[in-house]
Length: 83
Image 1 (cartoon, rainbow, N blue to C red):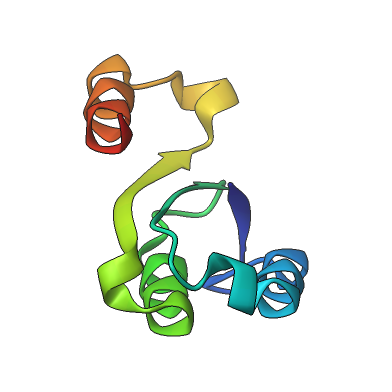
Image 2: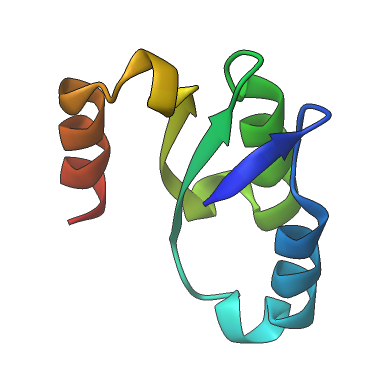
């Protein structure tokens, strides 16, 4: 999970992934993003490039969930991809 920072995933997430790159190299990943200014397409694409597109199995973007509510269908779809 990461907030969207300037159309990118948060720097602490980048630091974690960099620090543990060797341990995570054989793992698949799923990510969801929260933002208040729109979808997380840029952050998703940058994460795909950073970890390798084949490693990112599922993504989801929640835009202002406190205001807009949660999209149960989208959440179920995301969860079904990672289970």
